[in-house]
Length: 75
Length: 387
Image (cartoon, rainbow over all chains, first blue to last red; front, top):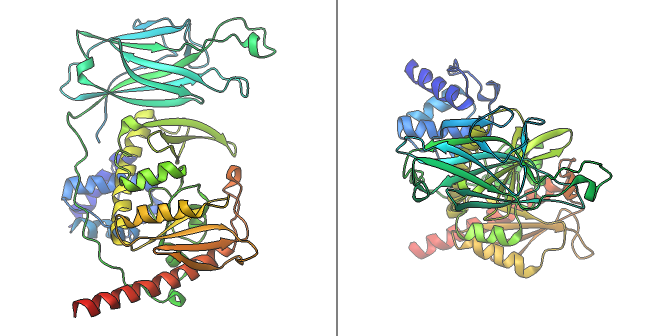
């Protein structure tokens, strides 16, 4: 499932206006330069479009790492 | 919403499309008289157009605080605005306005004034507004945001308050405006909940109207103005949504990103935040916090609590200054779905970022405890009815 991280890295890069971000399960989202609540919102909408999943509050509040985002994509 | 830039004009550069503008000055061009325009070929697009303009007003507070501006497309008014600060305006263009092969973007700015008339300046030229940038953006036609169904909210299992860290505790609360004090208190406690009004100020009437309608339209780019506000040594874009009188920090400083990116990300952010807000309204799984520095009329609080409960089992925690009858840090029920909390001090509106009162934590712990008890009673009553 490493492709998921590639796709997510692309979505994050698009949202931050930079090249695809290198993302792994242990990457802390807060450590990504430019990461903030607006970036997270854009990434969530990107995930919805790409994977067709809608996150709820409990899931969103628990998003800290690349693995958390990848878990979200699994539905 | 995907925004794609079709063309842009930097008013610091020469451009044949400009009429009625002075030569470039300080990164923009002042309008020469009461009317000016930009004429562009109509873009060949199947999408809807959005006009983005960055405008400076000539102001000299307190003598002259704002400038009137009307924007027209081919003679039809697109937007009327009062400009007090450097502002980015986003305006959706009705396709019916696009007749003919060109788009004439007209600007009317009647409040021309000579600096020498209102200040010690000797400048005898007339000023009203200056444009810094203009862009035409494309968004897919009929691209109303897809309303994805929110996942059905489940009643939260509420742990005892003693087992909650400060960060966990304050996640159960969501600010509904007035200002940023509670949102910053959550940050100091180690929590960063994504909440619609966490860093926003909304007047009471706009708040009630917004809650009643689930803040529909808050994520429409056409509803917003982005004003540059100066404070604490930084110049930040503050989002102003006139429909609700809402002002919200963007956290984006001037020059940090192009206007199109700013608008695009704020639209997306508010779409997600609004969805979370309406889910919170429906589930009642969080406590809505309303603070006010002046004593709030009881009728207002009941109206606000009722507006919340129209959507679900929501609870309002209204926090105001303690008085002789209410010690700081105490909380009590004041009606159905209405908790009143009392605090020793609230930060002044012009300095919401200073450390807040330590009594906020006491108030949250007490409010949570009372709320948890009431939720347990409601659940037992429900179980006894359905048994």
